[in-house]
Image (cartoon, rainbow, N blue to C red):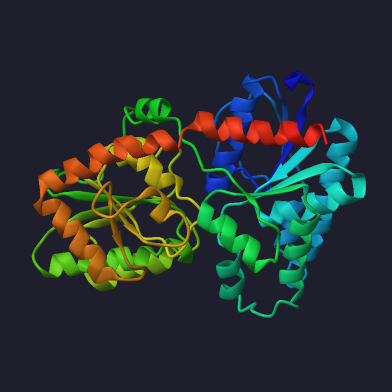
Length: 383
Protein backbone atom coordinates (compact mmCIF):
# COMPACT_ATOMS: atom_id res chain seq x y z
CA UNK A 1 0.00 0.00 0.00
CA UNK A 2 1.06 3.64 -0.51
CA UNK A 3 1.41 4.14 3.25
CA UNK A 4 4.31 1.72 3.25
CA UNK A 5 6.28 3.55 0.54
CA UNK A 6 8.93 5.76 2.04
CA UNK A 7 10.43 8.52 -0.11
CA UNK A 8 13.58 10.50 0.58
CA UNK A 9 13.91 13.73 -1.40
CA UNK A 10 17.37 15.33 -1.50
CA UNK A 11 17.80 19.01 -2.35
CA UNK A 12 20.78 21.34 -2.49
CA UNK A 13 18.87 23.76 -0.25
CA UNK A 14 15.35 25.09 0.24
CA UNK A 15 15.70 28.37 -1.58
CA UNK A 16 12.78 29.18 -3.90
CA UNK A 17 14.07 27.80 -7.18
CA UNK A 18 12.24 25.67 -9.71
CA UNK A 19 13.60 22.35 -8.46
CA UNK A 20 12.93 23.17 -4.80
CA UNK A 21 9.37 24.29 -5.56
CA UNK A 22 8.73 21.12 -7.56
CA UNK A 23 10.19 18.98 -4.76
CA UNK A 24 8.13 20.60 -2.02
CA UNK A 25 4.93 20.46 -4.06
CA UNK A 26 5.50 16.78 -4.73
CA UNK A 27 6.29 16.08 -1.09
CA UNK A 28 3.20 17.97 0.10
CA UNK A 29 0.80 16.18 -2.22
CA UNK A 30 2.34 12.70 -1.99
CA UNK A 31 2.22 12.88 1.81
CA UNK A 32 -1.53 13.50 1.52
CA UNK A 33 -1.79 10.35 -0.59
CA UNK A 34 -0.22 8.20 2.10
CA UNK A 35 3.45 8.18 1.10
CA UNK A 36 5.89 8.66 3.96
CA UNK A 37 8.11 11.64 3.16
CA UNK A 38 11.41 13.05 4.33
CA UNK A 39 13.39 15.88 2.73
CA UNK A 40 17.13 16.21 3.28
CA UNK A 41 18.43 19.71 2.53
CA UNK A 42 22.19 19.65 2.14
CA UNK A 43 22.40 23.44 2.58
CA UNK A 44 20.94 25.50 5.42
CA UNK A 45 18.93 28.00 3.33
CA UNK A 46 15.16 27.78 3.88
CA UNK A 47 12.87 30.27 2.12
CA UNK A 48 9.74 28.22 2.76
CA UNK A 49 8.43 30.14 5.75
CA UNK A 50 5.92 27.56 6.95
CA UNK A 51 5.66 24.32 8.85
CA UNK A 52 5.97 21.05 6.94
CA UNK A 53 3.72 18.05 7.60
CA UNK A 54 6.71 15.69 7.19
CA UNK A 55 10.33 15.57 8.32
CA UNK A 56 12.78 18.10 6.87
CA UNK A 57 16.43 17.68 7.86
CA UNK A 58 19.22 20.22 7.26
CA UNK A 59 22.87 19.14 7.14
CA UNK A 60 25.48 21.19 8.99
CA UNK A 61 28.61 21.61 6.89
CA UNK A 62 27.63 21.42 3.20
CA UNK A 63 27.55 25.21 2.66
CA UNK A 64 30.93 25.67 4.34
CA UNK A 65 32.54 22.97 2.19
CA UNK A 66 31.13 24.51 -1.00
CA UNK A 67 32.85 27.79 -0.15
CA UNK A 68 36.34 26.21 -0.13
CA UNK A 69 38.28 27.13 -3.31
CA UNK A 70 39.24 24.51 -5.93
CA UNK A 71 38.10 21.33 -4.15
CA UNK A 72 34.62 22.42 -3.06
CA UNK A 73 32.60 20.24 -5.55
CA UNK A 74 34.46 17.08 -4.54
CA UNK A 75 34.40 17.78 -0.81
CA UNK A 76 30.74 18.80 -0.87
CA UNK A 77 29.78 15.70 -2.89
CA UNK A 78 31.48 13.34 -0.46
CA UNK A 79 29.97 15.12 2.51
CA UNK A 80 26.58 14.94 0.76
CA UNK A 81 27.15 11.21 0.25
CA UNK A 82 27.86 10.83 3.96
CA UNK A 83 24.70 12.74 4.95
CA UNK A 84 22.48 10.81 2.52
CA UNK A 85 23.96 7.48 3.60
CA UNK A 86 23.33 8.43 7.22
CA UNK A 87 19.69 9.24 6.43
CA UNK A 88 19.29 5.99 4.49
CA UNK A 89 20.54 3.95 7.43
CA UNK A 90 18.22 5.82 9.83
CA UNK A 91 15.13 6.26 7.63
CA UNK A 92 15.49 3.26 5.25
CA UNK A 93 13.59 4.80 2.29
CA UNK A 94 12.25 2.76 -0.61
CA UNK A 95 13.15 5.42 -3.19
CA UNK A 96 15.48 8.44 -3.20
CA UNK A 97 14.81 11.37 -5.55
CA UNK A 98 16.98 14.39 -6.45
CA UNK A 99 16.63 17.22 -8.98
CA UNK A 100 19.80 19.38 -8.69
CA UNK A 101 23.32 18.27 -9.58
CA UNK A 102 24.69 19.18 -6.18
CA UNK A 103 22.19 16.65 -4.81
CA UNK A 104 22.04 14.21 -7.74
CA UNK A 105 25.72 13.23 -7.63
CA UNK A 106 25.80 12.09 -3.97
CA UNK A 107 22.30 10.60 -4.32
CA UNK A 108 23.37 8.36 -7.20
CA UNK A 109 26.51 7.27 -5.32
CA UNK A 110 24.51 6.49 -2.18
CA UNK A 111 21.97 4.53 -4.21
CA UNK A 112 24.66 2.32 -5.73
CA UNK A 113 26.55 1.77 -2.47
CA UNK A 114 23.48 1.04 -0.35
CA UNK A 115 21.40 -0.61 -3.09
CA UNK A 116 18.53 1.84 -3.05
CA UNK A 117 16.26 2.83 -5.92
CA UNK A 118 17.10 6.32 -7.16
CA UNK A 119 15.20 8.76 -9.38
CA UNK A 120 17.12 11.66 -10.93
CA UNK A 121 15.10 14.49 -12.45
CA UNK A 122 16.51 16.76 -15.18
CA UNK A 123 14.85 20.18 -15.08
CA UNK A 124 17.54 22.28 -16.77
CA UNK A 125 19.79 22.06 -19.83
CA UNK A 126 22.87 20.12 -18.72
CA UNK A 127 24.59 20.54 -22.06
CA UNK A 128 24.26 24.32 -21.94
CA UNK A 129 25.36 24.40 -18.31
CA UNK A 130 28.53 22.40 -19.01
CA UNK A 131 29.38 24.32 -22.17
CA UNK A 132 28.95 27.59 -20.30
CA UNK A 133 31.72 26.29 -18.04
CA UNK A 134 33.75 25.56 -21.22
CA UNK A 135 33.32 21.79 -20.78
CA UNK A 136 32.90 20.35 -24.27
CA UNK A 137 35.10 17.26 -24.06
CA UNK A 138 33.05 14.16 -23.22
CA UNK A 139 36.04 12.72 -21.39
CA UNK A 140 36.01 15.64 -18.96
CA UNK A 141 35.50 14.43 -15.34
CA UNK A 142 32.38 16.57 -14.84
CA UNK A 143 30.72 15.21 -17.98
CA UNK A 144 31.66 11.63 -17.09
CA UNK A 145 30.40 12.06 -13.52
CA UNK A 146 26.99 13.20 -14.76
CA UNK A 147 26.78 10.45 -17.35
CA UNK A 148 27.66 7.81 -14.77
CA UNK A 149 25.14 9.25 -12.30
CA UNK A 150 22.37 8.98 -14.88
CA UNK A 151 23.51 5.55 -16.05
CA UNK A 152 23.30 4.00 -12.58
CA UNK A 153 20.00 5.65 -11.60
CA UNK A 154 16.90 3.45 -11.40
CA UNK A 155 14.97 6.05 -13.42
CA UNK A 156 15.71 9.36 -15.13
CA UNK A 157 12.92 11.90 -15.68
CA UNK A 158 12.83 15.21 -17.59
CA UNK A 159 10.16 17.90 -17.32
CA UNK A 160 9.69 18.48 -21.07
CA UNK A 161 9.78 16.33 -24.20
CA UNK A 162 12.56 18.36 -25.75
CA UNK A 163 14.69 18.13 -22.63
CA UNK A 164 14.09 14.37 -22.36
CA UNK A 165 15.27 13.81 -25.94
CA UNK A 166 18.25 16.15 -25.58
CA UNK A 167 19.40 14.63 -22.29
CA UNK A 168 19.16 11.08 -23.64
CA UNK A 169 21.13 12.03 -26.75
CA UNK A 170 23.79 14.11 -24.96
CA UNK A 171 24.57 11.50 -22.32
CA UNK A 172 24.00 8.52 -24.65
CA UNK A 173 21.20 7.14 -22.49
CA UNK A 174 18.20 4.98 -23.37
CA UNK A 175 14.99 6.95 -23.89
CA UNK A 176 14.10 8.68 -20.60
CA UNK A 177 10.72 9.48 -19.08
CA UNK A 178 8.94 12.83 -19.21
CA UNK A 179 6.68 14.34 -16.56
CA UNK A 180 5.53 17.92 -17.06
CA UNK A 181 5.60 20.47 -14.25
CA UNK A 182 2.18 21.03 -12.72
CA UNK A 183 0.66 24.05 -10.99
CA UNK A 184 -2.11 24.49 -8.43
CA UNK A 185 -4.19 27.18 -10.14
CA UNK A 186 -6.60 27.72 -7.24
CA UNK A 187 -3.80 28.22 -4.68
CA UNK A 188 -1.89 30.60 -6.97
CA UNK A 189 -5.00 32.70 -7.52
CA UNK A 190 -5.74 32.78 -3.77
CA UNK A 191 -2.16 33.82 -2.94
CA UNK A 192 -2.32 36.58 -5.55
CA UNK A 193 -4.87 38.48 -3.44
CA UNK A 194 -2.41 39.16 -0.59
CA UNK A 195 -1.27 42.80 -0.07
CA UNK A 196 1.91 44.05 -1.73
CA UNK A 197 4.39 46.87 -1.47
CA UNK A 198 3.70 49.64 -4.00
CA UNK A 199 6.72 50.31 -6.23
CA UNK A 200 5.21 53.10 -8.34
CA UNK A 201 2.68 55.84 -7.70
CA UNK A 202 1.71 56.19 -11.38
CA UNK A 203 -0.39 53.14 -12.19
CA UNK A 204 -1.39 54.44 -15.63
CA UNK A 205 1.89 53.29 -17.17
CA UNK A 206 1.67 49.64 -18.38
CA UNK A 207 3.80 47.21 -16.35
CA UNK A 208 5.72 44.16 -17.55
CA UNK A 209 6.50 41.57 -14.86
CA UNK A 210 9.32 39.01 -14.96
CA UNK A 211 10.22 36.39 -12.35
CA UNK A 212 13.41 34.45 -11.70
CA UNK A 213 16.82 34.25 -10.11
CA UNK A 214 19.21 36.96 -11.27
CA UNK A 215 21.50 34.64 -13.21
CA UNK A 216 22.83 34.57 -16.79
CA UNK A 217 20.35 31.90 -17.88
CA UNK A 218 17.34 34.18 -17.33
CA UNK A 219 18.46 36.75 -19.93
CA UNK A 220 17.24 39.78 -17.97
CA UNK A 221 19.77 42.07 -19.66
CA UNK A 222 17.96 41.62 -22.97
CA UNK A 223 14.61 42.37 -21.34
CA UNK A 224 16.04 45.58 -19.83
CA UNK A 225 17.35 46.53 -23.29
CA UNK A 226 13.84 45.97 -24.71
CA UNK A 227 12.40 48.44 -22.18
CA UNK A 228 15.10 50.95 -23.15
CA UNK A 229 14.21 50.58 -26.85
CA UNK A 230 10.56 51.29 -26.06
CA UNK A 231 11.53 54.26 -23.88
CA UNK A 232 13.66 55.63 -26.75
CA UNK A 233 10.43 55.66 -28.81
CA UNK A 234 8.79 57.74 -26.05
CA UNK A 235 6.70 54.71 -25.06
CA UNK A 236 6.83 54.41 -21.27
CA UNK A 237 6.65 50.81 -20.03
CA UNK A 238 7.44 49.80 -16.46
CA UNK A 239 9.37 46.60 -15.74
CA UNK A 240 9.29 44.79 -12.40
CA UNK A 241 11.75 41.89 -11.98
CA UNK A 242 10.90 39.67 -9.03
CA UNK A 243 13.98 37.86 -7.77
CA UNK A 244 17.43 38.10 -6.29
CA UNK A 245 20.78 36.62 -7.19
CA UNK A 246 24.39 36.99 -8.16
CA UNK A 247 23.85 39.42 -11.06
CA UNK A 248 22.02 42.09 -9.02
CA UNK A 249 24.83 44.68 -9.20
CA UNK A 250 25.40 44.09 -12.90
CA UNK A 251 21.71 44.46 -13.72
CA UNK A 252 21.40 47.59 -11.55
CA UNK A 253 24.33 49.07 -13.48
CA UNK A 254 22.70 48.10 -16.78
CA UNK A 255 19.46 49.86 -15.78
CA UNK A 256 21.39 52.99 -14.79
CA UNK A 257 23.44 53.00 -18.01
CA UNK A 258 20.22 52.70 -20.03
CA UNK A 259 18.79 55.73 -18.21
CA UNK A 260 15.60 53.94 -17.18
CA UNK A 261 15.94 53.78 -13.38
CA UNK A 262 12.51 55.41 -13.12
CA UNK A 263 10.94 52.59 -15.15
CA UNK A 264 12.69 49.42 -13.95
CA UNK A 265 12.68 47.93 -10.46
CA UNK A 266 14.29 44.75 -9.13
CA UNK A 267 12.45 43.61 -6.02
CA UNK A 268 14.95 41.17 -4.56
CA UNK A 269 13.68 37.92 -3.12
CA UNK A 270 9.97 37.82 -2.28
CA UNK A 271 8.23 34.90 -0.57
CA UNK A 272 5.04 35.31 -2.57
CA UNK A 273 5.48 36.73 -6.10
CA UNK A 274 1.87 36.17 -7.17
CA UNK A 275 0.31 39.45 -5.91
CA UNK A 276 2.98 41.40 -7.81
CA UNK A 277 2.48 39.30 -10.93
CA UNK A 278 -1.28 39.85 -10.72
CA UNK A 279 -0.76 43.64 -10.81
CA UNK A 280 1.15 43.39 -14.06
CA UNK A 281 -0.23 43.94 -17.55
CA UNK A 282 2.16 41.60 -19.39
CA UNK A 283 4.39 38.73 -18.29
CA UNK A 284 7.80 38.41 -19.95
CA UNK A 285 10.16 35.43 -19.92
CA UNK A 286 13.57 36.33 -21.39
CA UNK A 287 15.33 33.04 -20.57
CA UNK A 288 18.20 31.78 -22.71
CA UNK A 289 17.31 28.19 -21.79
CA UNK A 290 15.01 26.36 -19.38
CA UNK A 291 13.70 22.92 -18.69
CA UNK A 292 10.04 23.84 -18.24
CA UNK A 293 9.29 27.31 -16.90
CA UNK A 294 6.99 27.28 -13.86
CA UNK A 295 6.66 31.06 -14.04
CA UNK A 296 5.08 30.93 -17.52
CA UNK A 297 2.43 28.50 -16.28
CA UNK A 298 1.84 30.63 -13.18
CA UNK A 299 1.41 33.74 -15.34
CA UNK A 300 -1.16 31.85 -17.41
CA UNK A 301 -2.99 30.97 -14.20
CA UNK A 302 -3.04 34.67 -13.30
CA UNK A 303 -4.42 35.50 -16.77
CA UNK A 304 -1.51 37.62 -17.97
CA UNK A 305 -0.69 37.82 -21.70
CA UNK A 306 2.76 36.29 -22.18
CA UNK A 307 5.82 37.18 -24.21
CA UNK A 308 8.55 34.54 -24.04
CA UNK A 309 11.79 33.71 -25.78
CA UNK A 310 11.51 30.54 -27.82
CA UNK A 311 14.14 28.95 -25.61
CA UNK A 312 15.14 25.34 -25.30
CA UNK A 313 13.37 23.50 -23.82
CA UNK A 314 9.69 23.76 -23.02
CA UNK A 315 8.60 27.18 -24.29
CA UNK A 316 7.31 25.68 -27.52
CA UNK A 317 5.55 22.91 -25.59
CA UNK A 318 3.55 25.46 -23.60
CA UNK A 319 3.17 28.37 -26.03
CA UNK A 320 1.87 28.39 -29.59
CA UNK A 321 2.89 31.69 -31.16
CA UNK A 322 0.02 34.16 -31.52
CA UNK A 323 -2.42 31.57 -30.14
CA UNK A 324 -1.82 31.55 -26.36
CA UNK A 325 1.28 33.75 -26.17
CA UNK A 326 3.98 35.43 -28.22
CA UNK A 327 7.35 33.79 -28.91
CA UNK A 328 10.47 35.77 -29.82
CA UNK A 329 14.05 34.66 -30.59
CA UNK A 330 16.50 34.24 -27.72
CA UNK A 331 18.78 37.27 -27.08
CA UNK A 332 16.72 39.49 -29.39
CA UNK A 333 15.87 42.66 -27.47
CA UNK A 334 14.21 44.31 -30.49
CA UNK A 335 11.86 41.36 -31.05
CA UNK A 336 10.99 41.40 -27.35
CA UNK A 337 10.28 45.15 -27.53
CA UNK A 338 8.13 44.67 -30.64
CA UNK A 339 6.05 41.96 -28.93
CA UNK A 340 5.52 44.07 -25.81
CA UNK A 341 4.54 47.06 -27.97
CA UNK A 342 2.00 44.94 -29.87
CA UNK A 343 0.35 43.78 -26.65
CA UNK A 344 0.17 47.30 -25.22
CA UNK A 345 -1.31 48.66 -28.44
CA UNK A 346 -3.81 45.84 -29.01
CA UNK A 347 -6.04 44.95 -26.04
CA UNK A 348 -7.95 42.41 -28.13
CA UNK A 349 -4.74 40.49 -28.85
CA UNK A 350 -3.95 40.21 -25.13
CA UNK A 351 -7.47 39.06 -24.26
CA UNK A 352 -7.42 36.43 -27.01
CA UNK A 353 -4.06 35.06 -25.85
CA UNK A 354 -5.31 34.86 -22.25
CA UNK A 355 -8.48 32.99 -23.25
CA UNK A 356 -6.46 30.37 -25.13
CA UNK A 357 -3.96 30.11 -22.24
CA UNK A 358 -6.86 29.14 -19.95
CA UNK A 359 -7.17 25.98 -22.05
CA UNK A 360 -3.41 25.35 -22.00
CA UNK A 361 -2.96 25.22 -18.23
CA UNK A 362 -5.43 22.33 -18.00
CA UNK A 363 -2.65 20.15 -19.43
CA UNK A 364 -0.23 21.16 -16.68
CA UNK A 365 -2.04 20.38 -13.45
CA UNK A 366 -0.45 19.63 -10.12
CA UNK A 367 -2.66 16.56 -9.87
CA UNK A 368 -1.23 15.06 -13.07
CA UNK A 369 2.36 15.75 -12.00
CA UNK A 370 1.82 14.14 -8.60
CA UNK A 371 -0.04 11.15 -10.04
CA UNK A 372 2.70 10.44 -12.59
CA UNK A 373 5.48 10.68 -10.02
CA UNK A 374 3.52 8.53 -7.59
CA UNK A 375 3.05 5.84 -10.24
CA UNK A 376 6.78 5.94 -11.03
CA UNK A 377 7.77 5.57 -7.37
CA UNK A 378 5.29 2.71 -6.90
CA UNK A 379 6.59 0.90 -9.97
CA UNK A 380 10.17 1.01 -8.63
CA UNK A 381 9.17 -0.58 -5.32
CA UNK A 382 7.74 -3.68 -6.99
CA UNK A 383 10.72 -4.38 -9.24
